[in-house]
Amino acid sequence: MDKLRITGGRPLEGEIRVSGAKNAALPIMCAALLTEHALALENVPRLMDVATMAKLLARMGVELGPQRDGRIELRAARVSDPQAPYELVKTMRASVLVLGPLLARCGRARVSLPGGCAIGQRPVDQHIKGLQAMGANIAVEHGYMDARTERLRGARVVMDLVTVTGTENLMMAATLAEGSTLLENAAREPEVVDLARCLSAMGAKIQGAGSDVIRIEGVASLGGARHAVMPDRIETGTYLAAVAAAGGKVRLAGAAPETLEATLEKLREAGARLALEGDAIGIEMAARPRAVSLRTAPYPGFATDMQAQLMALNAIARGTALITETIFENRFMHALELQRLGAEISIQGNTAVVSGVERLQGASVMATDLRASAGLVIAGLVAEGQTVIERIYHLDRGYEALEGKLAALGARVERLR
Image (cartoon, rainbow, N blue to C red; front, side, top):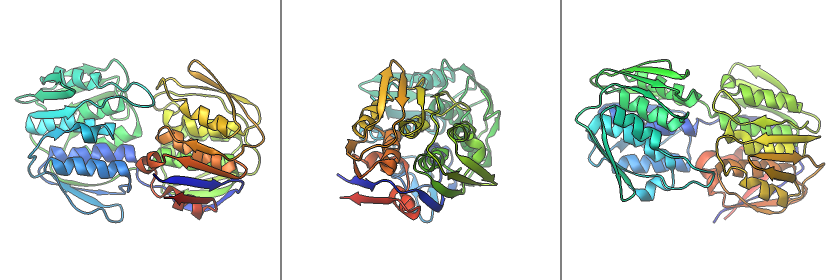
């Protein structure tokens, strides 16, 4: 199993380009199930999760061209097998996003329940509730959701809690439903907006994406489209946090600064100098960061996917920070690994108290989830000596060419096979 070895203590300098967003690419790939015409995507990141989604769609009968230079074409002229088996869903929870499109297009779907998740409960009850309101019959048996409908009908769906994948699933299903669908308490994340842009290019009628109320007028059919996936705001934030912790001067090209306001504010508070130039973000850090407290929240609040990265920054900051996690109940597992590097962190319920130390020491650590892995990478960049991160398959799920991009900025990073 691959490992990552980082020799810390070197500031980051240079320029890199941000990849397309994993969390936008995956639902947009599922949107190909809604039409018999070709969906041509650009700026698609080369990641393990993207490959898994491509494998799942191909199993259903979707024709996929090779992924070259961030481009891939999908065509679901015929959906031969509307099923998502456990062996694929268990490795990538986003596989549940095929449920809505399959019901809308085929009138039936058999999708495995995602099962457990290391960072906490991520139930699909809101997906089921919304589709049932639209007229689907769904039975949960033997670990699968078996769903059928003659045709989905528009409905008013008030979600009990904000769910990104739930909003995306219901929005896709509603595009082909009869009549009007109103999604209330919808997720406002930029990835939801990007999916709506793609669906609109395919001929869907969607209003309000990016707000907590989305209205969709169903149409008889959707066509093909060409769509460029939005930049990955979490990848962008991760590299910015790395520079804020390690020091240096870096320019990130191909970013989307408007999707990162909460993260940028915290980095400014930590002492980083930021320059926003169109789709580029420049960051300069010449001193040890200041501690910054934060509380995770649904967008536009501070993203839970950036919590581990800011914990790593706070581990070497001046002062003490309180980090409160409100989204996932088990998302502090990286704190124990950071302690192995010398971080002073105590957990009190859903709050971590991080007292910054002047320096961390390199050691062997283990990644527990995707964003925890990113936090450990940042810690390794600032630690004295060598840090070896095990189980980096988590990183390969969500960061394209991580060690190559860090090396381009002067970091000493190598993959051990």
